[in-house]
Image (tube, rainbow, N blue to C red; front, side, top):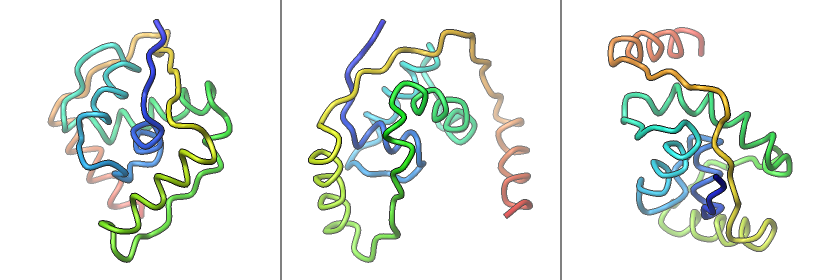
Length: 119
């Protein structure tokens, strides 16, 4: 079942860069896409699962590059306003059709160490 989400929450889910004042929207996007309530330790792994599916549904979002913000309190709202002007305020997302496995805390720690080692 399709559900509508704010562009900032959707782009946060594809980039891992927080573009909103609250994590609630991000959790809603991720949880809707995977079909279960995501937990904090699962987010990095679920970004890798969710982003390709969002790009499949909305390929225009793949070109977005989030800059490094000098003053996030000022720069993030300006960037987000630009996203709204360019793409519209809301995106409809369909959940991922294949089952997504949950990630244990131990597995999440292991994957985080691997990511750091491969930077």
